[in-house]
Amino acid sequence: MTEPSHPVAIYPPGTIVELGSVNDYVYAVILAVMIESSERVSYKVVWWSGRERNEIWVDAMEVQPVPSVDKTPIGFVQENRS
Image (cartoon, rainbow, N blue to C red; front, side, top):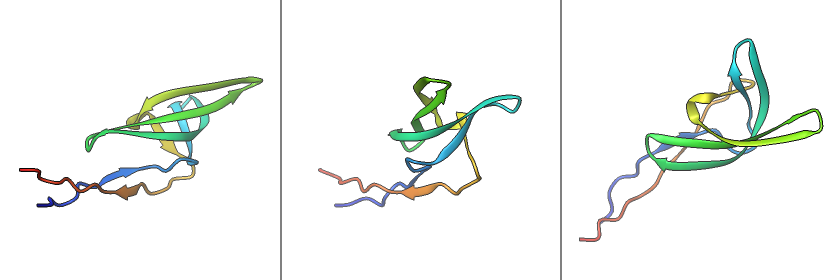
């Protein structure tokens, strides 16, 4: 038996985002998305500071897309194996 899908909304890889506060932020690009649960999404982002390349994982609440874009809904179907 198949249960209904549980959609998760994400920003796709390649999206340009701002990291940090309003007065102290950097522009970064999303490289990868990690979906830990329907309530927890993390993004691997990269940015350059001079000649230094920086790459980190951040929580979804830490990124703001530039320009503002809609998240892409994706869904998963869970199979009931009983």
